[in-house]
Length: 118
Image (cartoon, one colour):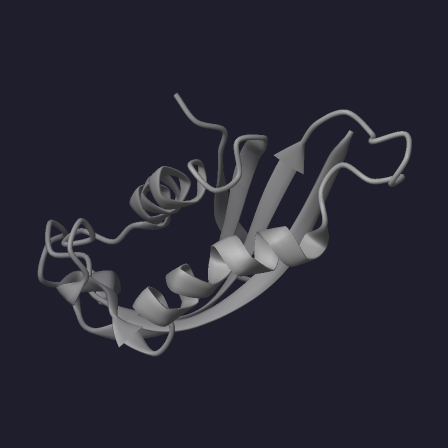
């Protein structure tokens, strides 16, 4: 069974490897929507896979590191595409959430990526 929490991040970034005329080569912002999915068996006694509060607790340092920040200044996010952000999030959440199964990042209402680990 899968559970998920949805989080919001307000961030600025630029994608430094794009041609100068590309709009994303300039500093711009996104209201990122991030889904954190955790898979596991249903605990018969508790009736859940994992307490949603545990996902929120694992997310708290992520929010502190990224929300209302310029992503290019965050160590490991010098080229902060949604794909690289998903991998960065995975690496930081997986130790606290062993059942982490996928991260979904939406950078606009109609575009995003899904990362399921290596």
